[in-house]
Amino acid sequence: MPHVLSVHGGDLYDPSKWMSPHRHFLLRMWVKRLLRRADRLVGQSRNTIENVHSFYDPALAVERIPLGIKRPVVDTATRAEYGFRDDQVLLVTVGRLVARKAMDQLVSILKDTGRPDAHLLIIGSGPQEPVIRQKASELGLTERVHFLGQTDERDKFRLLQMSDLFVSTSQHEGFGLVFLEAMASGLPVICYGYGGQTDFLIDGVTGHVVPLNDMAAFTESCRELISNQETRRRISAENRERVEELYIDNCARQYEQLFDELITEHSARENAGKPK
Image (tube, rainbow, N blue to C red; front, side, top):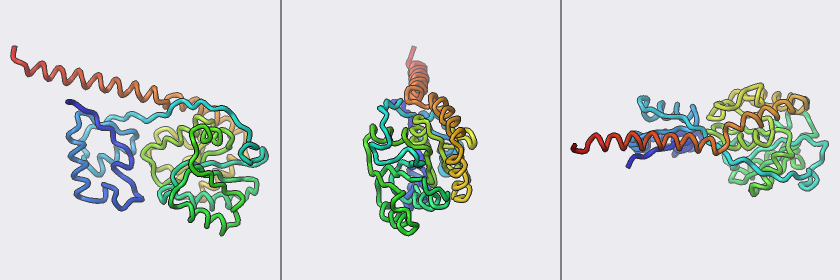
């Protein structure tokens, strides 16, 4: 039976994990065998395809089909419902609180913006929460860093839509669906330029994409967008338009086309091998 193998960031490469397959000979060989046996390979980003070629087999043909999100259906909410004020600037991030996300950097960046009206909303939970809380306490930001925990989809999109900026200090993303959710919510995105998100995030257009771990550039990007409401409005409209190509129906159409092609090729090979 012909099959398509879709590979994703953490399956192949996770710089924060000692047991990431790319670090170990036996795991690399096992993954390489799986990759070579597939009839078609799909990577969700150029970064993932580069990792296939760099760590596993440079000769493999890999097609790129981006991931997608469902079009969010959101009932709007007021900030007061969640305990925030209209005169506050809300920076929001979404993700597991793990080392790869480096969210303690966001706490330092919040401090360095020099904006006492800026608050950081953290949606998600994980083992790094005590570390991030300690950082907020050390910097005197306990009242401005809000740990919202895991939320359902309704609350997540309500919080995104009432925020001003989406920020991520993740050290690597194979694709980054949370960036699409932010774009669909009309948020400018500030993040590092290492990972699959560089396929669809453009510095100065969708927000700011800054060099990995350049916290000074990240802070300056936050200051700029916090101070310039008109720029935020322009980017908001741009992101809502750009994300239209990255909803799940477009992703599904590309996979359907790939399946059709593979089935046709497989049928032709089977028919060619039958006696006449």
